[in-house]
Length: 200
Image (cartoon, rainbow, N blue to C red; front, side, top):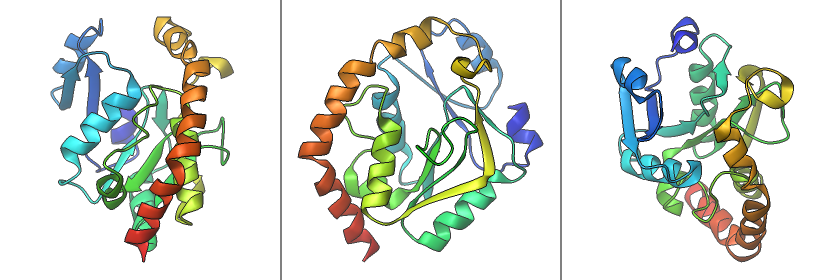
């Protein structure tokens, strides 16, 4: 919240919080937009929240709770790029993966509407960012903004603490990789075609 305010961000911020989160009361005390639900993993949670809010916004994005926006008016820079694209996917520099994958991502709402989801529904946690990059590259509507810093405070780089949630996520690496490959082989090209159709 401090980073959001100090960067001058004016985008609406919605917290998706699991109902078994030990700090749930602290989230509620923030008095901001909070959606509380069962622990269904990040992919299904993002899809639920995106579809619930897709008619309210021109663009929808995601940051994990280990992302920290740094660049002043980062949200304005991202939305301006989305407006230039018309239909598209934009991401900044997380100082970890950089251009390689969009660990924090923002896309025009028409993409979510066209696909019926924010991320492939078979994926629980891992390879979401790979899929977002696949969509953008395949439909030629992906932009990387290296000067927009949204730092990934990941414990793998010593910027955060490894906890049970990270451990739980790591267990999903292999099964989500299998599901990603299945999605890529069976559905990716159809999704890219849907995005290209709304760009034309």
